[in-house]
Length: 414
Ligand SMILES: Cc1cc2nc3c(=O)[nH]c(=O)nc-3n(C[C@H](O)[C@H](O)[C@H](O)COP(=O)(O)OP(=O)(O)OC[C@H]3O[C@@H](n4cnc5c(N)ncnc54)[C@H](O)[C@@H]3O)c2cc1C
Image 1 (cartoon, helix red, strand yellow):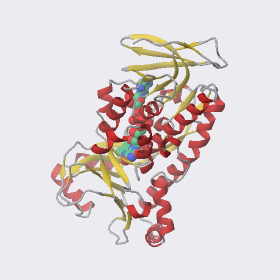
Image 2 (cartoon, protein in one colour):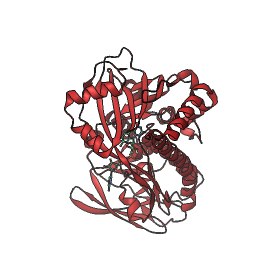
Image 3 (tube, helix red, strand yellow):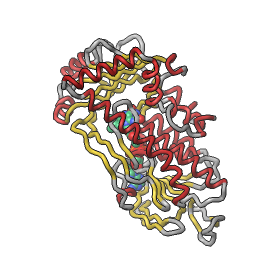
Image 4 (tube, rainbow, N blue to C red):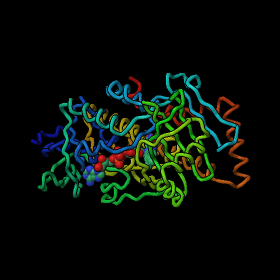
């Protein structure tokens, strides 16, 4: 590929840059940022280590919040995604077999759906196809970033591409390279958090229930179980338990596993069939001390990770991408240098505290429900009662989990 070179119009005017920004990591979060910058006037490259098809082939599905759907709609990619994803109008929150079930429905939020469930392939290929129609965004893929040198005026990225090592120059580097982010580590950015005592077993089932528009979160003392509807009477299940138990469930004979699953889903989905492998994921909570330094900014799992309860991780990353796109676009329109730390701190001030709130909320949910100590059991059942009987609390929790609390990116207001 040819690397376009142009002349910087800002303070560092004698430097030739290959790109205004390089997004390292073409996962859903990195690709959302690139899509949001279509027609922005900024020239971006996405550097992805895996071939595009392999990057999209991950067998995972995610709960997508109402705010994420609005961001995709603002970008212009939602109409590609919408026909191929699960939609839910109801959410049922229950404490194991305790009868006090909290039920959320669309009237509580005034929206057509309470949320959506998208498979990784559907989401990422839609974004990849959208990016392919953009003149100002290009891919460097498969290409691995080997190192970055940050200078006052820009950054020099060393990449390995088609067996050759070469360098490219950019004003800004965006780390969208996932939870083990090399960019974060190379920059010496520390993280806080912990690994949970639990792992998740994630898989897809086919069921026989007559309707497929309900998402469940059932809290068992071993850990939460999320059941999310997918098209074709399928559901994505994320089942959390202490490591050894999760591993045992992953390895359990299929018939026994399904019998156990039918018990744990309370028979709500009828007879079940397993239609994917059971994949084991470790679970962690992580927040980076900083999201930025001069010429570098982190988004998505590179900046933070949370427990999968409530399906928040990717949604936070999509919000990061929309917020950063807005900050960069505004900076460009004002003639500011987009890699300047003062510009990048606007993004950090916007997103860091909002992410921390959700990280804290998911941690609180997991700890209070994965617990059999009587005072905690009493407290959480009282909490469920409050949510079920006092609409203010119910709607507040729903708005928090659907992304409708906090500052809304302009993309989601279009
Ligand atoms: C079991 C489970 C269930 C979940 N369910 C949900 C859910 O329902 N809803 C939700 O919102 N979230 C959910 N999450 C969280 C979600 O999976 C993550 O938050 C999300 O995938 C992070 O996306 P990302 O693009 O930031 O990172 P990634 O998906 O990790 O993408 C990073 C990309 O960077 C590339 N890369 C890495 N290093 C380099 C390099 N040096 N050079 C070039 N490229 C590189 C990788 O190949 C990859 O494509 C769940 C997580 C788990 C574990």
